[in-house]
Image 1: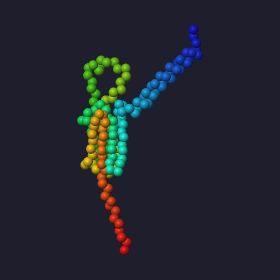
Image 2: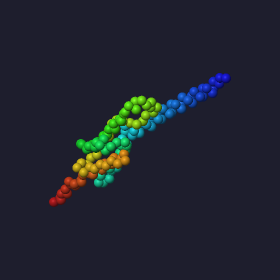
Image 3: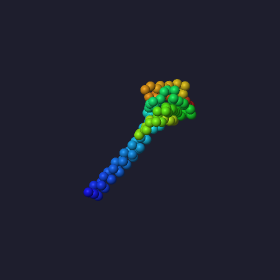
Image 4: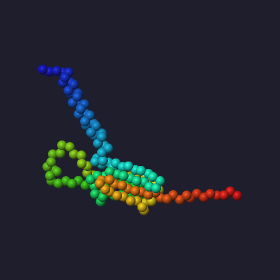
Length: 143
């Protein structure tokens, strides 16, 4: 027997469930580092800047760091590892990201000769000491 009310409810329930799943999966995936975005924390103290970035799944040789014209630039590339078995597989869902990463940060008064970086367990830490500020002011006595 046909129940129009029940079928209509099922249609709208299925439609909105599918819409919500697709919308929210796509929306929240924008913030995932696996989609080509580097997530970073930048902390400033009196003596230095400290930058921590999540870059999982890379070797340190795949990461490049430069400091030029007051910009610290972090770039990395994750190369795809494709073999014949990958081409034969029927992926239902694939999230592993292969490609380039790139972030720049404007940081003034950095002692560029003493920048240090370390990479361990997918976490890059960059320490940027600040230049010593020499007080160039001179007090002039009034006669």
